Length: 421
Image (tube, rainbow, N blue to C red; front, side, top):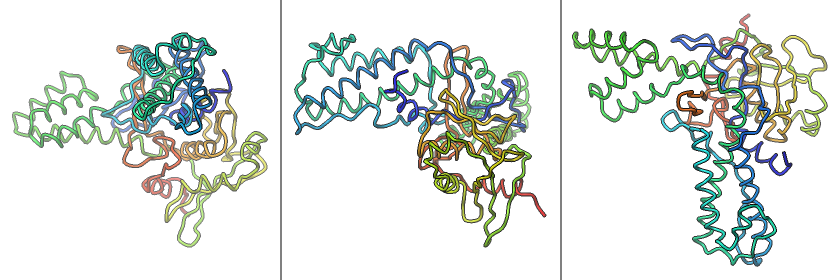
């Protein structure tokens, strides 16, 4: 793939290119799951998906047009922003009630609409250019303010198309595995909360939403029978409360530490310091410019609060409990459940993106799962993706330079990762 697209792979892929790999694609979620994670996979497709290729080629034409426009219009003309100058926030903004949905049909439809919009923006005289003849682009008059605004909207939509296309491509070899995660879906729980807030206790739609949520745990026959028994006893609210609590527990599993690993911890001036030793390699040193202090600073900045702090300590030899790094040719970074002290990093990562990704993967080393969910619906042929913590930018839910680690993670580390004397 052309070097032109490497920056956009990193920028767009950062928000959904990491996770915890497991060897079991059929791990099931129950009301008290032993381990609810695996929101990323370690595989690459041998062939590029056609809709992905089409979106990449379209993006190249758009970027060439932007460069041409900026070069040939007057110096007083407001320049067009690069398609690659900003990332899509699809993965940041997705929620259980407004998830990101990706399918081949949707991608193709969006692509066609954007191509028609682009053709209209650059004018019918540039039809040959639109079809791929790059040298045939005619010099345009400067965009009017309204045209410029329309083009910015078009760029945002094109970035989203590109982000979805890359994600769709990266998951082609794992759709079957992703389909096994459908039973971890918690959208019905959030639907129940929304209906209760809008309609109030006792509304028939609340009961209906509770019945729907019950279906995640039992067969429709059992749900109906249980509901009717409680209803005859005027205890219908107990049915709602029961399954609301079950849904809450199911969601909570995305935020719980699932590991028996303990770490070296010490107290300094009322602060617990958890130390993770690591060994470097030449590639990591080169990408960091030898500045391991910056790496430690970036990790500690995110993994610390007033009473707890995680620090990295560079050592010379690999051993039990010592963190190491392996570089992957694909765009995926992950920690394998079977080898929790090895972080697999995408070779495309550099600078702050690299430090940010390592900080996220440190969360997996410490035993925390991703708090976003992604699965494949075989019937609808769609990938569904959503974050489970949108009130703050939680580092384990999504990657963002502003991401934080909430206090309840540190409470769990204090209780389970630092051995008591």
